[in-house]
Image (cartoon, rainbow, N blue to C red; front, side, top):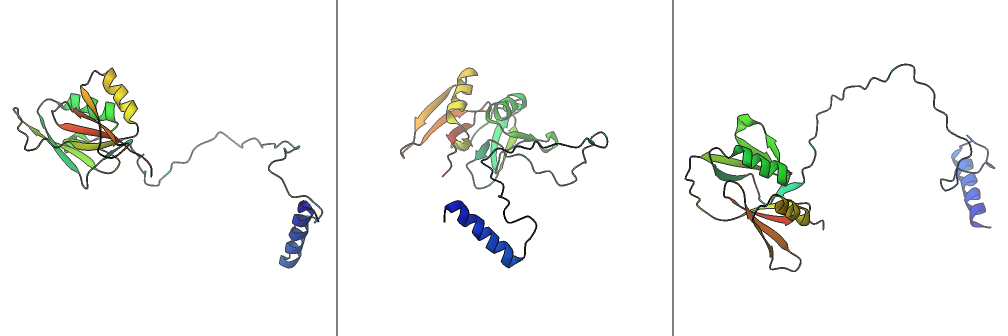
Length: 182
């Protein structure tokens, strides 16, 4: 028997044993690779379309940035830098700003980045860079060049690991790395 005949035979045996008799045995099953000859006709709607409000809880969209930390990160900034920080973190990197009543807080995909506002001059206890994963390091570098932000592209200790080191408007060190799917 040819392959097609075997499949018809097996289908017929299955239908007989299970008791399915909804279409004749000789009818060929629909083949998705073969074009259909009969066009599909839609009925006119009874009235104008009114979408139903979805009452389920809204799940926020995934953001294109992740913090390389194990919990929420805290940085310090001088007073009066809120507009520059918004432009840098929201406009350039893709964070989401969380309400103004909570202070300066930016949401990444995994954690929040909180800023403690201090009066200048600001003294930092450490110069450790905050790690931020972006979708594309090349795209981030293009945007930094377009905005004329000083940065340094550096190679890591392991093969293929590169990052961009720069300072945010508040003077905090930031290290951008590219997120890679494993």
